Length: 193
Image (tube, rainbow, N blue to C red; front, side, top):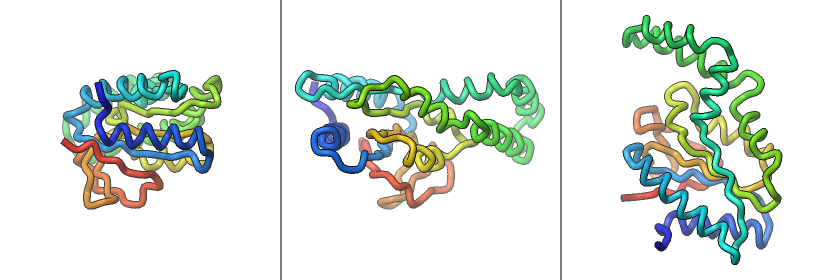
């Protein structure tokens, strides 16, 4: 099965980095949140393509949802946060307090970026990183923050699977609900329809 053009573009950038050197590409693969399962399937196709004998790139797929829940569980605040969210009963101010508390947990050591880097300790030299299930972070944590923190710590290609909406050429609205963020220091590749 041939790769969709946007995925082939990402794959070529990754292979070019390993074959020719330069700065490791950081890519945001933007897609409609409703396409989550299709995109995960496509990630499997890209993985197969990259790991072929002619390219020999190992793919390290990291679930941000898994890291999110590990941070919440390890904080010891999970039950209290769940109770506080239930008590908020849809009240925006109460929910904002919960989201702020979750964001703080994800910033404390080990931060979300620390957890990603930890997953790469045993990765080979010819490994590319794919961050998926970013929607679990909504609305507590912006993915632009994570990519900025990883930029100086990860020396290999990083692709963030981004559920959201492309606004103009450079704006990204997380989950299609958050105010757009501009200035991502990554190439934005839109999945399209």
